[in-house]
Length: 427
Image 1 (tube, rainbow, N blue to C red):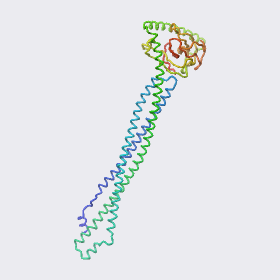
Image 2 (tube, rainbow, N blue to C red; image 1 turned 90 degrees about the vertical axis):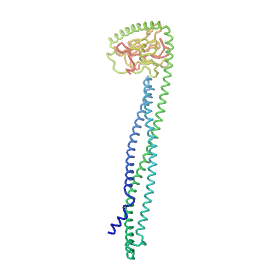
Image 3 (cartoon, one colour; image 1 turned 180 degrees about the vertical axis):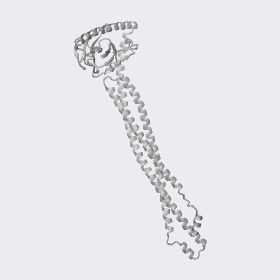
Image 4 (tube, rainbow, N blue to C red; image 1 turned 180 degrees about the horizontal axis):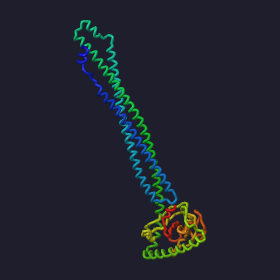
């Protein structure tokens, strides 16, 4: 009866376990959240690596395309524009990684502080419990029985028993708190360890991504510089051609008349070439169909004019254009060998009288009754003759500047079913 009364008098221990349970739950929740954050960051690093890899491949492909024979500068410009957009996406992803690294560094400092504080709390509570245990079993302490025998009052005995029972319950609560603190400290320690490892790993990955981004920026800058160099070269050739054409068409009425005359003579030349092809077909020198693909007529050159609509008013209308360029202009040093784009039979070598009083020297090769290639502005030399069979790569002429030309270049045309088409379609 005395014991029950003593416990009732002392009440519940001051340090209830709910606060420690909350601390432990918070530590475990923080640890679980960190693991989720780590998984998400790994996904983002992988996504950034994929972006970097795609960008690097695209830059390498574009640089290779730019160095290739017959580079399509318009296509390269479009690719570079797309890569600049991709660079912005890569930079944004990298900046996000850097920001995450700062957040992780800040979180790590907070958790380290919490771990340090909990370590101190645990040490203090362990010391307190050890002291109370020593006091409880101090051999010099007077036991409750000795107090009763020595003539102490019932009140003294009750107070002494209440003290012993209270200390026991408080010790149990303190021991339970220490156990919870140990779990909390272990969770915090694991969180700190994981945070430190992941922060260091993310720092290394971020640095690697920065190096890769810097390399991509340098490569892209080199590609842009190469494009600008080619653009300047092409612009110079175009300016020279434009000046010549401007001089030729000062009198627009006269230019229109000359264009009309040229068109008529061109049709006459086409009929002549058709007759020559018919003769070669009958002789069995031209196959009924062309199987294969073309090569560029020269081994090294720049392109000063693409196939299609043009701003040069000297060009006649065609294919829905006010001024239509029916081939591709290839610029190389004077005398550069011009080679057959594919296997076929030479059906014309000589002056293109459709040009009027200032004709260009041309060579026409038939690859089938409906497919032929034209090579214009050549030097007036005859490395091949009409009726001669040629292989892909056979020299058919040498780059010159005959006809309405402002400098050495080759005007290369592909004629299919009586119409000139884009040579790039056959490469």
